[in-house]
Amino acid sequence: MTEIISHQAENIPLKCLVVDDEPMAREGMADLISKVDFLYLTGTCASAMEAKTFMDKIAIDVIFLDINMPYLSGLDFLESLEESPLIVLTTAYPQYALDGYRFQVVDYLLKPIAFKRFYQAALNAQQTFRLHELAKKEGTTKKQSVLYVKQGDAYQRIVWEDILYIEGMQNYVKIHFPQETKVILQTITSLEEMLPKDDFFRVHKSYLVNVNHIDSIEGGRIFIGKRELPISRHRKNDLLNTVVFKSLLNKNK
Image 1: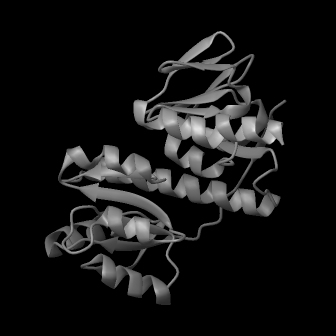
Image 2: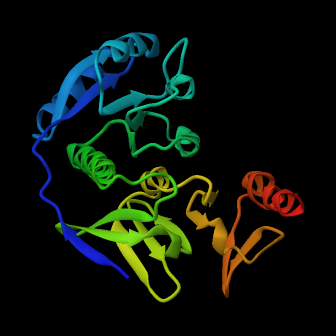
């Protein structure tokens, strides 16, 4: 059963940090942020090391992070963080886009960045932040079954245990249930961040599955009921090791 819960978000700007080794890129991003009323620029950093020092002193909600930087890349920086704010990756090199899937980033911006595309990423960050805040107010924990997704001007409360799998389509996702499918304006990565990691597994860049509903794994395919989904070759071993084999071991105890 689903329930629509209207929500009037607080008008508190998201605290932003820009990390880029190019001065003109930092200035350009600062200018874009200044045009969005729900974003507030707390500072800019020329390196990942400088950003780490900055973050030790000031709490940040969103980092606009360049990938290709000397000494310590943006991705290396993310790997070094135990907990990170929301991340929007920025780069002039599209080949780095797939690397971003390893991290729970909100969005990925390709330079030069047009304002329309930047604003879309900012909205994604704002929406993800609000969902996190709603979850905190609801008192949800890893094993509780409530998830909020946005539809129109409302937030829809759903039970994640009923989700079979989630299909990503750029900035939209399809959430598949046994009897229905919901289409929402949300990235698959931001939803992955909200869901319990013991129960949901990213089998492909476009598919996030509820492992409790997997009926079988055959070759490069996963079967959930009569639905057949692809699994990336490099993710299959992870799925077997972290889900299937673990389950078999637990049953044999």
